[in-house]
Amino acid sequence: MDALQGLRVVDFSKVLAGPLCTQYLSDMGAEIIKVESPLGDDTRRWPPFHKGEGTVFLSVNRNKRSMVLDLKSEASRDVVQRLVKSADIVVESFGPGVPERLGIDYDSVAALRPDVIYCSISGFGTQGPLRDGKGYDVILQAYSGMLALTGEETGPPARSPISPIDQATGMHAAMGIVAAVVRRLRTGRGTRIDASLFDTSLAFMAYVMQSYWERGVEPKRWGSAHESLCPYQVFDASDRPILLGVANDALWQTFCRTVGDAGLAQDERYATNAGRVSHREQVLEAVGAHLARDTRDAWLEKFSRAGIPCAPILGISEVLSHPHTLASGMIQHLPYGEDGLKTVSQPLRFDGQRPVAQHPPPALGEHTEAILASLGYEPAQIRRIISGA
Figure (cartoon, rainbow, N blue to C red):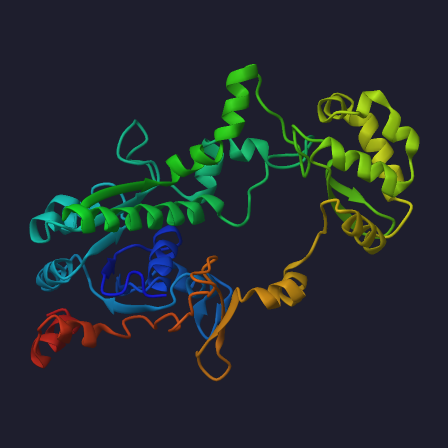
C-alpha cells in the first residue's frame, strides 16, 4: 500500500497511542523516523519480552527507523531543526509544556516548515481544568464513566484490558492526519491536530450518554448483557459458555423454533424486544434452561444453521488457530532473528489486498547514523552528535 509514499513522519511519541498511529501511517507507505531518548520508548522495557524487547513495543513499531537523540542537549538542537524541516508530518505525545521547552511545539515547528501537519496526542487535551493532567488509558476509563459500566452488576468496576482508549486515540489521530494530508494537497496549508484520550473516551460513551440524557438515570453494569436487547449475552451450555445474540423479533421466533418451545414463541409478553427487556429475568431463566440441555458445540451448529448470531468464548490460542483468522491475512510474519516475528496487520484491505508489513520493529538507535547522514552531517559531526559532545 503506497498511498502515503513520499511523506516523512517524524515521530516523537511513545508507549501506545502515538506509535500505533504512526505504524498505521507506515502501513500505508509513509516513512517513519522514530526519535527516542537514550533509554528508548518505555514499552521496550515492559514485560513480557521477545529477544530482549517488550512485546507491547513490538506490536506497534514495525516499518519504522529508530534514531536516538537526547532532546535536552544542545548538540541535538540543530538535528531536531533539520529533522522537522524535512518532515511532512510531526507526531508528539509529550506532557504539557515539554514541547515548548524542547523547541518542538507547533509554533516552533511551523516556523521551520509552514505546511507541516502537526499532531499532538495528550491525556486531556489543550483546554479545560484537567489539561495539565497526565492521562493513561485506565485513568480515562475511570474519568469517562467507562470503568463504572464495565463488569458484573454486583461486582467491582473492571478495567478493559486491551487499552481501548489508547488504541482508538491512535486510530483517530491517524484519521485526522490523513484528512490533513488531503487538505494540504488541495490548499497547500498545514494543519495542527489535537487528539486526546479524554476526547476519545467521551466519544466511546456517546450512545450511553444519549440514553442518560433521555432518562436521567445512571446506567448500571451489565456484564456480557446489553441494556437494550434480550436475550443478548453469555449463557452456560451443558459443558462450556456460549454467546447468544437475539437482536430482533424475527430472531426470537427462530430461536424458539430451534429450541422447540412453541409456548415461549407464542407468549405475548416476549413477542417484542421491548417486552423481553421488560421481562428480562423470566426470559433469561427460560433461555438458560434450554441451553443447559446440550453442549456448546451442538448449540453453535444448530444456531448457525438457523441463522441465529452466536459465538464460542475463545481464548487467544483458539483465535489464532481459527480457520477464519488464518484465512483473513491478519497475521503476518516479519524477519526478526532466527525465528522471525508475528505481527497483527492493519485491519483494512486496499483493492482487495492487505498492506504487507515490510520491516520489523527497529533496535534502539539502529538507524541514527544513516538518518544523520541523510540530513547532511559529516562522519565527524555524526560521531560528536552520538557522543553528546
